[in-house]
Length: 363
Image 1 (cartoon, helix red, strand yellow):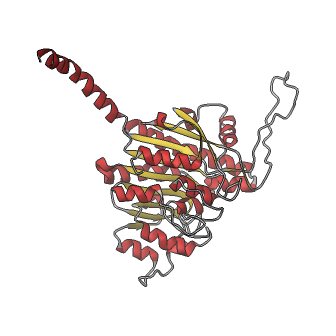
Image 2 (cartoon, rainbow, N blue to C red):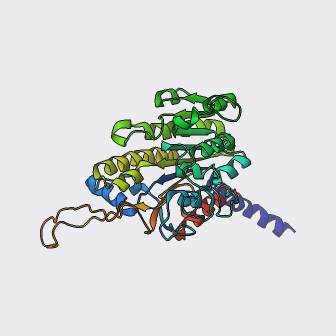
Image 3 (cartoon, one colour):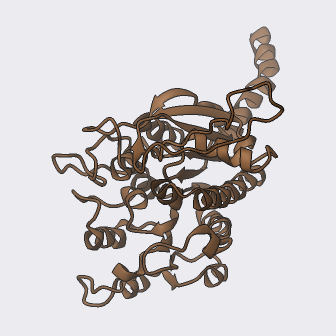
């Protein structure tokens, strides 16, 4: 009996240490960042244009890859890919937050809200666009902004930051505008980044543009400031329950569609600064996991040398796009913070969503 008691006393510090170690590895907050259309070549381009000085992506502690096909197409669109990343469910191209038979796909944000977590969405597009819409809306066609706006009012996301005012000034079922309906539900409704930064811990709808925000060159440091302030608000509101924030660099995709290199470099630099804000937050906030990925690749960018004679001191760099559409290539996943090693390898985009939901115990 005495031997057993002695053994228990000796093991208690070890058991306590294991318990504390498990708690230190528990993820309370996830910052899910999506560079719309951002293939690996876009990140490589950013490194080249930065003269190979470290970018935020180079801080990643873990790397994975995802496939991106939709249910009915080997090359996905943003609606189907957004639905996969938001809910872990495959659907057809152009469908948003629902399966082809009309069954709704419950997003990780909806599940986090049910669990009592704080939730937020920050984008550089309209809030009704495909990727943000996939996290709260359920419509058969992505270009149904009025129906998507109605779902936005119903979804109870605590923080919404982006564009899309043109549909929020429409009359809703209650007889006033959606902006007024949000205010009636207790949201602080603001219209610029300076006003957003004055908010302490209220629920917030920040609508910065009639549709999409300006290009990176015209919107300044909106995205990194919006990410930093949103994290501050959500952290104050969340307490021990944690939060889930989705951030989209929406216009990386738009620049890729246009094959506009100057625009694309600006969007990637802007997204890189937003990633830095998220990683810095994770550094000072244990229990935070940052997941950075893309919904698909746009433009088919390659980075060939100008000259095939590689004996030359420098062959030069030539950026070449192969399409104005999307491609079927895999996209990278960068991981940082608590629990980064829980996501690894090659997986489908639906599996990435399921892993995030499992980490947050939403499944």
